[in-house]
Image (cartoon, rainbow over all chains, first blue to last red; front, side):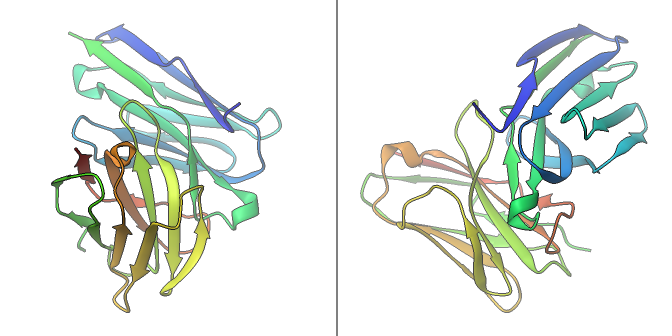
Amino acid sequence: KNEVEQSPQNLTAQEGEFITINCSYSVGISALHWLQQHPGGGIVSLFMLSSGKKKHGRLIATINIQEKHSSLHITASHPRDSAVYICAVSLMETSGSRLTFGEGTQLTVNP
Amino acid sequence: ETGVTQSPTHLIKTRGQQVTLRCSSQSGHNTVSWYQQALGQGPQFIFQYYREEENGRGNFPPRFSGLQFPNYSSELNVNALELDDSALYLCASSQTGPNEQFFGPGTRLTVL
């Protein structure tokens, strides 16, 4: 079993829909990261959080430390949101610098 | 502020050859991590360097080695290339600790 599990693996939505991607982890963490990867490979950091909720534009990330679960929400989705979204954790046991990744969620938003 | 850069962008090698990939860290960052991402999978941690010393290693054989230089740029060296080494190699720079990591665009390595 992977230390970081994401669901769903693939998600197709219509423009304007509200999207949720889930992430569960089984290890002690010092932080959780949500990342976006476009075709061609470049990875962009969207959020880093260790408690509560963060919002940036149409993106919202939440984390429940007790349940070891995080969600990434996209409101009013748009075709330009199409990308792979990856959940990653900074492990507490490794002083936090290295990341352990989920497999990613491929999101496709159709116009 | 200059972002993280990697070179080359693409590389094709044959089995048994050696390769060196390069990464230039973001200004002010003292830690660099290298990751391997096979097609359709999440990245896997190779190793990390902090102040020119290896600071953690993932489940990769010794033929994967690295260096970090005084200006915090870094190299990933892979000897005796195997077909399974074909992947996207990403470096990420950060301050040490559980901080945001800034990724380079990656080097896509193909081993024939």
